[in-house]
Length: 156
Image 1 (tube, rainbow, N blue to C red):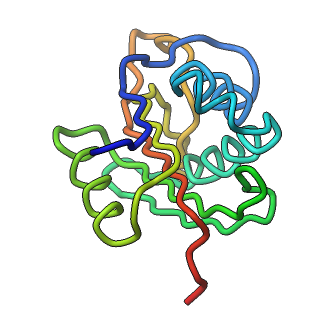
Image 2: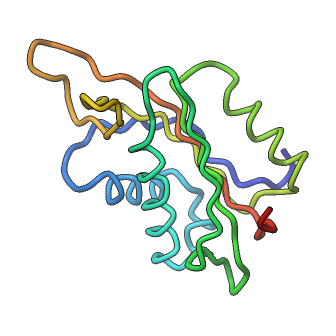
């Protein structure tokens, strides 16, 4: 993948505390290569985490969520970005398939993050990050959250 900035799924979140957006922000900072984090204004990564958390909230077990955001707060060194967030039940080859398609279709990403996170689905189905095993020993589910930044894509 040439010079693509890629942070793998080496960290699964299990720590508690904070909103999903705050926890994703910390996870993004921890997983991204240091030079990538240094290139971003922290407020931009914080906004990216908020957008990813909103997509996560829409996830239903067995379904996929694809969010494409042209948020005006998403910039890198003065250039507008598009964020693509894909959330799916965790499965093999998903990351490579998605990043390959995005790269082939839109060009080289400026940032790619891929945490596999523990979640609980509420009664309405929406997901939230899980901190621990629930009472009764029920294990949380795992989802793959792929978050990609690209130079701004045109609106269709």
